[in-house]
Length: 484
Ligand code: ADP
Image (cartoon, rainbow, N blue to C red):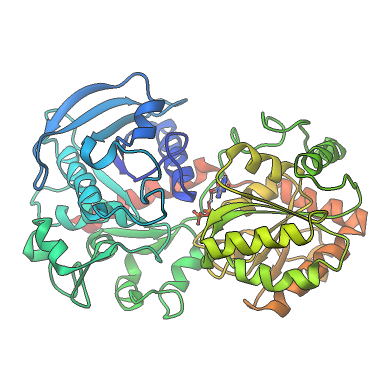
């Protein structure tokens, strides 16, 4: 099949979260199965700086663009996947985050920027760029590329479309004037289209018009059809439920593997699990914490936003801090969370280490050094860190939500007895529940034999991209059937 995979980020070129990990891995796995998949990304400043082999292969005249949009071609690093970059410097060649200014505000021209990306996908997928390539499938991701299925729905000989929701909480909602300024076809403006309470809702372009919709876990696919997690789109998602599927993300085990991890001071495996202790000592030293082998070390890496349950952690800290534990936290996000966490570090520097920022190598060291990993998310479409934690024998403590519920097997008495347990799972998003989970993890930690079993059961879990790629390919075929 010929597949155009459109995304607003992809590891290792540009990353703000899980979407980048998926867009950097899934196309590679699909390519390895013998399909011609091309990855479409904006030519951000950071991406241009990381690619050395780019050549201009086409120019597109797109509505609202002041000058021709160039298409640059290269390869996604360490892969055979063809990379196409949408090069329009006024929109993309600027420093910083793909979505936000240095002050943390969304770029004011985001709708314009990502509509350019969506329109480039429409042209490239239909062989209208002079590249002698026609897509059978266009696979789009999140609101930034969601207008592509909507625009393609108006084309008579269009490719089939699949739209993946990585996070329904971000929808790309703008005023009606923005819709007009973008010169979008008025055929799309109605409540079953991209209109949402008289506003433009970009993610609806994917949900309303794609032949198939997916989310990144089966539980999240169910959850978003209800009012608690549907963000106002539950009705439309229920209406399209026969087209809605949940496929769990995989893990890039070249990147996230304690046996090969270049960021660890000591590599280890399930059969040399005792070597992990050396990493723990190194991280304690690096983080300014006392070096203590027998004190449970809890890791947390996340965007510091409401979704991730940071308030639950903050509520649990007065209880947690009374115990013999250490916490290593890495993240950035809402200022009030950053400040409160830093305040806790000041109060208890011997127990809490907080790093504000984005640090790939520290993220690896936290996974490879902690005894347990906390993810108290209020909702979690898939979640990747619990999957990395399993591989690193770092026991995940998670809330039973979305992909966390689908990937961590609770350490109930029965699951411990039959050796299937892989982590601690709690139900309610409240202080009592998170404290219960942390206490349970600490109690189990002090029973070394059972704890090792828990770590090793986790390490034996496999979330293989090849399996995901096969599932997506089956859905691409189905999407072609739906297109008719
Ligand atoms: P989300 O996409 O909602 O942020 P995921 O768990 O799906 O959450 O993916 C988050 C990815 O981003 C993981 O690979 C995680 O390690 C990484 N990450 C998040 N915050 C940081 C940070 N501050 N530094 C380094 N990596 C981070």
